[in-house]
Image (cartoon, rainbow, N blue to C red; front, top):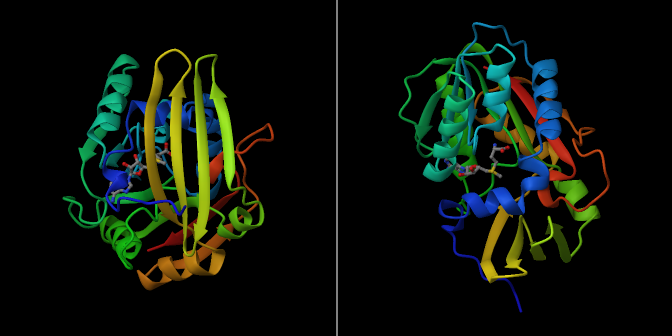
Length: 258
Ligand SMILES: C[S@@+](CC[C@H](N)C(=O)[O-])C[C@H]1O[C@@H](n2cnc3c(N)ncnc32)[C@H](O)[C@@H]1O
């Protein structure tokens, strides 16, 4: 049976359960450090630069950037729950940053506010209407200063297709099992995710669909919004061990300049 997806799935999925199901990628400090090493290698960031972590979830990248002395970071995400987790973490660790809960397609931010915008951890492709990702990238362009840089980190569509597996499961600690059933429905990958606690039963049964990009598609997306000097890197994978990490296995990193 084909996987049924509520088009508004992305408005509710990103909460504490997501931090469990994706913990192997998004709650592993080593992985975040490797990703931030990559950001610092690819972008000409200076201490005083303003950085927008767009669709930044629970803020792992801007928290790490702030730890490294880049203290003018802003986190924007739709999920209030993740923003609140980031806020608590920042205050516990005495790290200063700004927080905005909002939609990346229409941001309440003045033009030319940042030197860098980063979109990490496969955060594009959630809204199914054509043109939704173009709105996000155009907004990133608008809020960047002239000469500023964007960095987009998404799953490498070609690698996703070639290593596609319709079923996957993994355990989290002793008590929780995450099962995923997947389907390719171009240009989307649809997935049903069932999360079970061995002691308490069903935690979540939710489906989602994510648009996947190949290098040419991602490059066009940036170019159509006005970015130049676009470069795509496909050799990056932050996981040291083999495994099925869903969209986080094979990454495609695009940079572009305003
Ligand atoms: C897979 S998570 C990645 C989060 C973070 N970048 C990371 O790597 O940990 C995707 C995030 O994108 C956010 N997101 C997706 N579409 C968005 C939109 N239109 N506006 C704001 N946030 C959005 C979700 O709320 C979610 O927190």
